[in-house]
Image (cartoon, rainbow, N blue to C red; front, side, top):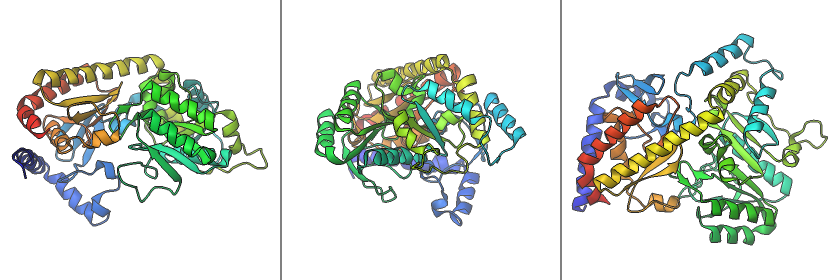
Length: 437
């Protein structure tokens, strides 16, 4: 092991030991869970070494764990928790739904109103159908494309995350559904267009996040999105924007912000008020295959697709809380925070960069901002773990992989406190970071 790697490993061992010593109750809870869940875990992204902490409660943007530590959540349930842990309007909406009954086995008074709010908000949505997760929404959007076109091949992008059953990481995910998928590098216009044309005769869909989420908060260039729109039209493929995460970044999602309209859009996360929710929709002719009045209708089942709790919470989310003006302000605050973090890195002369857009961003340790997931993955990953542990010690919770998703509950005071914590981290770790990168 080289000297610089040994320095980083020593710092990580110390940080892990400090984390573990401060959380005996979480350690015990994890040991108990090991007996009934593989790895004591039922959601992979929440696992980290030496063991994950166990939350006791959340209020606003503050999490309290079972050892009594309070941290400001800067990850906002990986974009689903836009409204914080305890927004009164979401709580009131859920209570309204509870008052009218949970499982009604019928259409209810919430779903049509919610569907109109969703369609009015996002430019590509002529019609919409609801699901229980973003994963379901993406699988159904892909099914729509293959049925409508009679083709089988899907063009995706390296680093894309389209739910637990459709992930395009560095290695093939054995749990992915068995679509016929070809992958191109993100933000590489020539490679993507060439691959679409090579597969044109069987190309059913082109699917992408207009900014990689889990892949490192790397925005697509407008030129890249425009090239995909053009080649989808040229080949007759269905262009799908997975805006499960990115729809929060502008009042009408990144499709509105970029002016590039897909054929289908998938949604999830905050749109349902932070409840279990997903949606897929788009061109009326594509969505018409699910019209049950048709003799050849494609069935779309799901007991909780129109559950009253989510429908009511979603109405509150879009009509009462995350209005267009609020969306603009919230994402401007995120842009300002990202700019301030990058300014801190420059001031401390450390090779750290923060990429993203609006209220979503991610840390990278390297000399230049990554343009795609491969470049992000080649950067120093152990430094992200050190950042994660050091920030927890300072009272701030980001994703282990270096991601931030600001909730509305993270105000000016919390953002200033986070900048102070990062200033301290960079002051103490600057020499180590320079040596490691």
